Image 1 (cartoon, rainbow, N blue to C red):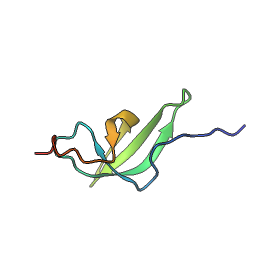
Image 2 (image 1 turned 180 degrees about the horizontal axis):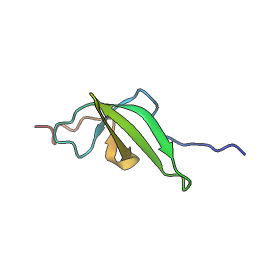
Image 3 (image 1 turned 135 degrees about the horizontal axis):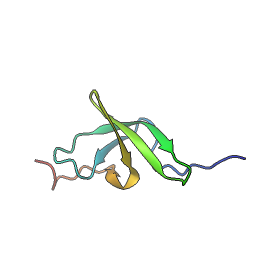
Image 4 (image 1 turned 45 degrees about the horizontal axis):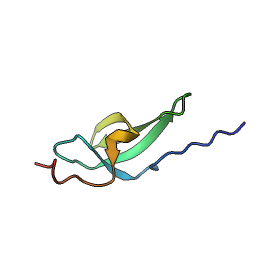
Length: 67
């Protein structure tokens, strides 16, 4: 049986973290789909990699948070 994954972003998309005070751009390099349908995205910023939920990510840089 095929499973449909409704991911909001694709590999290679540039995104920002909502809570990042520096608003550094990050690239989506992978995503993990859990049994309950939850999706976590792996983001790279330079040599750093981190996993985030969809609600933590945006495509718009928040200049109000930016230093």
